[in-house]
Length: 85
Image 1 (cartoon, rainbow, N blue to C red):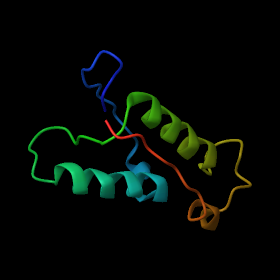
Image 2: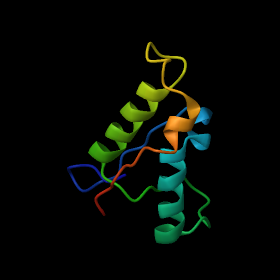
Image 3: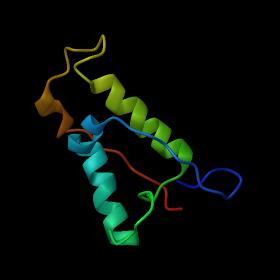
Image 4: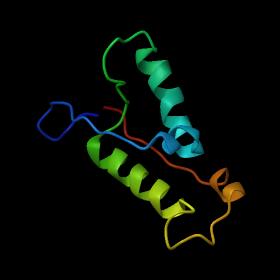
């Protein structure tokens, strides 16, 4: 993810993110933009602020948080737009 200074910022995420529909959408966009032929870290086509917002939404919807009244099927109804880098 591109930071405000034009450089990239690295994040470590829980493996549970990989099955979340919002993150899966971002991975599909990454494949379209960069492909999956990298031997290094996975690059995501969004700004740091967009990623932080995505992470906040995933954490908010996680059953391990205080907001456990959100059910899994609600995840598919979520939408998230990303600005291009």
